[in-house]
Length: 90
Image (cartoon, rainbow, N blue to C red; front, side, top):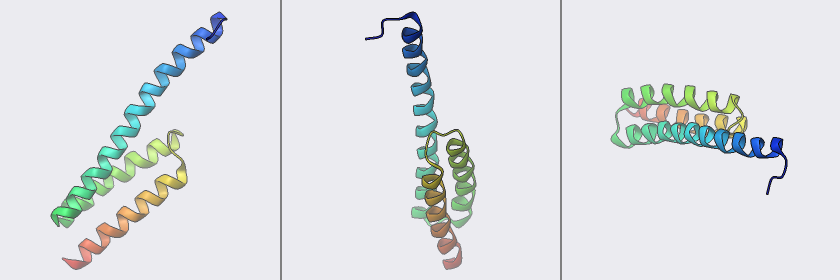
């Protein structure tokens, strides 16, 4: 348990930042699901639009240090590959 005034404040700040980071991470994952759903539906245009949103959100979150940059790059790369395959198929 925090004893000093500064340690108590640090605990409050950490709780606040954790909530913000969690919301941003959840929003990023939601954009991933939107791309997955568009791919599953077979709509290449919808998938490409969802991918643009997902890439933007993912790289922004990675830049803020909420997720690792390599994780973000890997996820965007894999989603891009699947959307490209869907576009080539149609």
